[in-house]
Image (cartoon, rainbow over all chains, first blue to last red; front, side, top):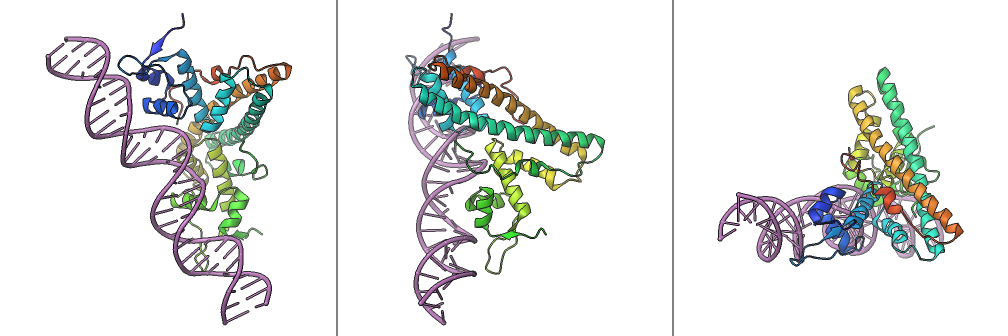
Length: 142
Length: 142
DNA sequence: GCTTGCTCCTCTAGTCACTGGAGGATGTAG
DNA sequence: CTACATCCTCCAGTGACTAGAGGAGCAAGC
């Protein structure tokens, strides 16, 4: 009932991650090395598929591979010490919060521009002001 | 009242962008080449500072340099055709919206983990499920 | 006015996270 | 059994930095 298996190309199509990138993720240990067929071909399952989709989304959101590694470690070691997991989750949470805040600010500004635009010309664009606040500039990256 | 000027090191400290990176941005045309002193040193002003801080935040949010270039073009050509600006702003807006949605989902999951954690063990971590939705997987990048 | 020491300059090379291609084996359809 | 797609490994290239070598500029102290 859950034993679907796919070759790398199929996984690539379904996850949106290209074959060379999938092999690369295996190489750097983000994705476990899958079993192989007689003919040495990689065989993936649904769990791999989900993991890859997760990695892809996280990368698109701008998380570095190391950050993703820590997120995946939460998944991979559900029995690990709570303190460790908590620390990781909290750090990521802070990062996520800041990103959301910045994106919301940028969104507001882009919306304002689209609206202003409807009424005439772009006039005063403040995209820079929106994201150039240097107050919480230091100490952002976890 | 607005004539502050700084050498590259000062700009680096204030913007959080390192000198070599600032020079790199100049090279690829994200930042205009500033005037130089007698002794061939770059001299920046407040506008450069804001622009750099903006670029930094946008990069942290995962926007590619090309996307940032289009955002900056809104700022740089406030008199350009509204249609062009509108198209750019709308495309970025869609991207921003999707990012916000994904980050909120991830945030919820991380929060749940921190809470669960407080009560005992990590147990079932679903960070992967949170971001592995493949439904709107294709057609995301503008 | 000259040395000490910091910042700056350019240039080249290295890193991270991929991306693409060469050259060859495998698997599947006619 | 021949096409032809897909896979394999390996190696080179890209984007966006990052670090280092080697040298010039400048401010401060003696």
